[in-house]
Length: 207
Ligand code: VGL
Ligand code: ZN
Image (tube, rainbow, N blue to C red):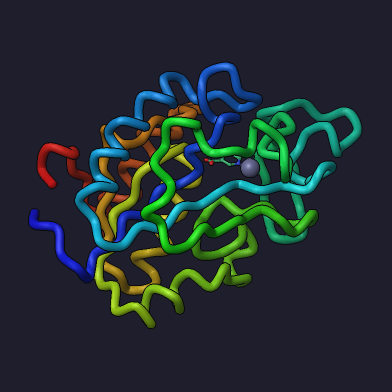
């Protein structure tokens, strides 16, 4: 695979709360940072996303009486997994990992800001209809292919890759630039679903 000027590197949620010691730590999450930094140096177009919740967000178990993190509830837009409080706007946990090279990014998409709706994908909130504006931005910039990296493989990377396909971008996920939460086989099912939908899974060495 050759990297072109019509490719986008999408760096998803490389934030302290998803790294070891964070509120919703992904095992080995910080090990994606050097891999992503090396890729950032090779792309013309880089966009970062930041999970950016108001306190008391509806995806937090603490916002629902009697619920625990990693449980599921029914919200108006469907089933929602409940999480520990994480990535609260302005908190240290919501900051990018301090080693992530952020300067070459032209855009930072912040998501999960509506208190009533979670947003895993960089393109759409979890109601699958409220847009973040990313697809329009990428079309205006003549981007044809979206290369996804970051945290977590089975949630925000997975939903972003699926939506990139729906928005008719050629879509690639760099597996060694991602780590998974892996709840009840979610990493395997995410991988199977992405393959079935035409997402290419590659390693950074193949880029
Ligand atoms: C994420 C759960 C809740 C993610 C964000 O970035 O994958 N997962 N919020
Ligand atoms: Zn979140």
